[in-house]
Length: 67
Image (cartoon, rainbow, N blue to C red):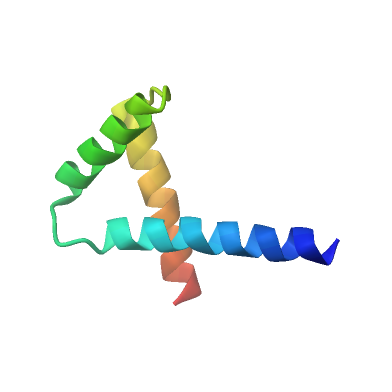
């Protein structure tokens, strides 16, 4: 069971790091959201703009809480 926890922590850390990198990137938020939407569409995931903005807001809230 410990191996599962370690793998989960590594994956969670990678996702959090990627999200943080996107949020603090020097580009405008609009450009970043477009890139995220394009990448998700390439992977077969179609989200509406409002859904992407909601996800970005949730990530931002979580980061602010952890600081």
